[in-house]
Length: 101
Image (cartoon, rainbow, N blue to C red; front, side, top):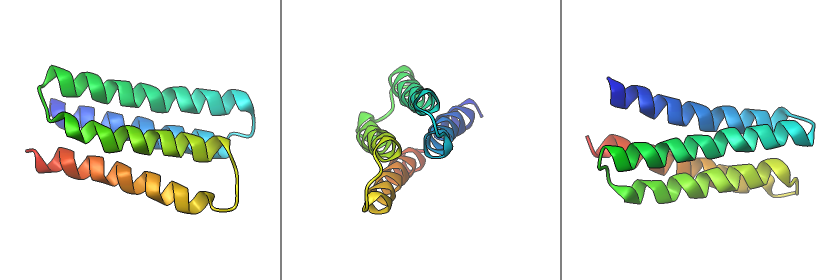
């Protein structure tokens, strides 16, 4: 039960940060959203180390977090493709976490 709760907290923090970054119209809200996303990633690192999980799952998680933060701050023509790649790497993290059980 505790592992599922921590998993949903981590994913929830990252999704919340994406919504804050994308819909916040000020730099302050963007920075708050980025801080929430990075805190979710730090919580994932802590959870992985504490419960001796496979550390390879952290690579797509951090790639996804950084890509989603970048797409929130920098708006350009192909941002939707880059955001899709960020969500795909987040999905890879979810796959790794669900596969290990």
